[in-house]
Length: 204
Image (cartoon, rainbow, N blue to C red; front, top):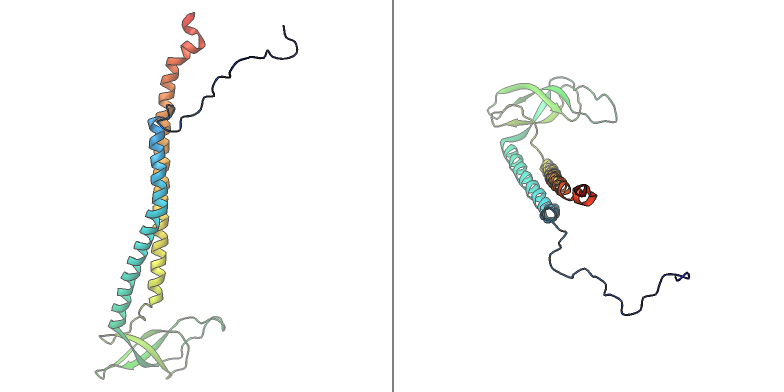
């Protein structure tokens, strides 16, 4: 008996088993391939689909809001009116707040009108103010500004991006859970076949 270490084996060493460079992996099952393709699809959606959907939705919302701005601007115009009463002052002297005040004006047809307008600044009774009216000569709110269209475009684009990401993440998680349930069911069925022979219960 050799007490100084393991017996030395003479002769050529057996070749090392290497993983084949190509070809199918025998340990890779159908569920693994499905999961890989789902991961590739998920990455493509986040890298390509999400920006495309967000940009398209943002541009569409921006263009739609610009049409609203153009329609409101063409349907309303400013005239000069006079305050029928002193406009209330702001709650804080350093903050510009819109306020309501009674005004009167003369329409293009010479008819006198009176109404309550939203003013950006205060003033005393009889002071001139600029108000917006529609084609019928009734008071109207100021038309939307182009900055509103830009804000709507950005908001819609961000909301669309969040929705696409949420749908992609939810779909990927559901596919993963379904594949895992299939794996666990197959593993349990295979273990019921292998376990008796592996544990030796069949030899009893």
